[in-house]
Image (tube, rainbow, N blue to C red; front, side, top):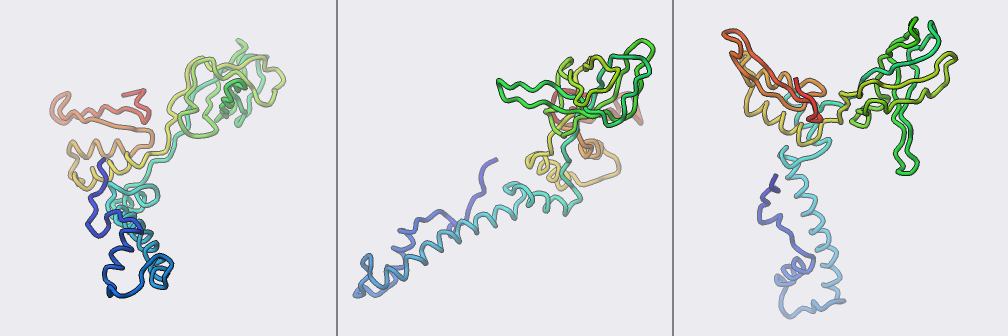
Length: 248
């Protein structure tokens, strides 16, 4: 997005330019050479004016959400009830192999293997419910990443460590990739949803309402709406996740 157009009085000026303007207002017979009393009195003022103009430009930008950032975007969006979507934890399953009837408690931690050569840390996961190894010697255990974000989206077979050994467990692996991990909503995405709310205000369930409702869901990146897709009284919404990797 192009930067905001600044009014003339907030355009960039150097200390030297400001000093020259102030000196030009003084009677010509006064000593304004560098090091004189007047020069030393005006120089700090020029420096402060430069700083004040910089701060005023920032204040002006924060008044318009398109040019704002961080907490200021959150505050402005909240005026319309639009809040930043938090980061999402990846989820999946690990297959635990071992002695039948061995209990895998809820909260059991698994991880990928750290790569010391590249400095890549291990990604940790935790089981979300208790499970027991079945008669066939394996059980699928539901897990979620310890930390939210895309780092938790790992390939099949990447999870191969049981962080605290459990007697009776001989191996762990994830048969399929974990998925669903997404970062916290960016300023750009939050601003886009805010502007959509302002420019296309809520109605009575029209096309724009469906798109807005779906995009409010954590983990959804974008959506399109197809009215009457299967005849009168039907609507279809196609969504893509925050990473752009999956759609429904």
